[in-house]
Length: 402
Image (cartoon, rainbow, N blue to C red; front, side, top):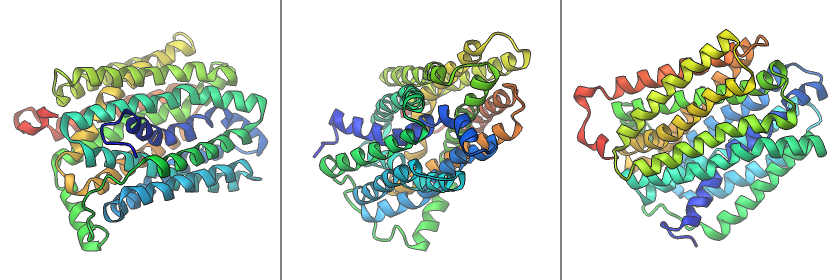
């Protein structure tokens, strides 16, 4: 079994957080193809993403509290096994409706990975060490969006869209076996009252009544909503508007993953010398620049696909600076309910991501402007949420010691 300080545990937790990225990003090159195969519209195909993310968010509300009561290990095994079976079901879906349904189930299972990975980090670490481990996990996670579109495009071109979902199922099988063989339970003192309604409501009030928890959760969800606006809208914008070949779509998309990796690497280094709050503020400044630049490029029509993607690289770099610190800061005041806190963070960010993706595709007008506008608005909202939660005159000492 892997120890808390083992680098292989970090790899395993990073792989668990990548279940979402792989399930979403590998399918992106196939979205236009699915619309043709099932003779349906872009917004209907978009449901394979939006409902996956919605289920992903809803499921986290259950995994976190249940893991506080029964432990992380059994819930991980259940969730990832469900993710694997649903992936296989997707591959054999005869209609768009059955595919959407299977993707919903896949989201319900896959959400166990990221939410419980965050809870496991909080079981073992806190403060700076927790933020550093989350950054290391982000480096592993970022490999998913870097390679997933390439893999998806390759499988689509060589074997068809079904191979994409079948490979996701096999990845889930491999993760289930790894959890069974290598992960020892990290929750030392299960809360036997964790799933009682009175305790759940009390813990929920405790989280929502803490301004820092809520504020950093809002920062987290705004960042994810902006990223998912790009994830959801970029296949149609890059392939249909800019004429990027589906097989080359991954080249552009991988640039955003490089940004996440560079941001996470920078974050882990900066945390050795600076507080988490200071690094987070640097990331928020990058969000402001990236959102404004993207909106200007989309509105003016300057350049081509590469110039449009360039601000998103900066946005994703900023995500690597902001999200690990925002997650650590939101969970820091509530160590006694780490599972529930992780669930709330995951639920809110995934619901926001699902809505932003749907809005982008609903407003899609064969231009990049709707996508860019949603991303810019989300960047502005993340900054506003931080300023509300942590006004300069009332920042408590413990925030600056992340």
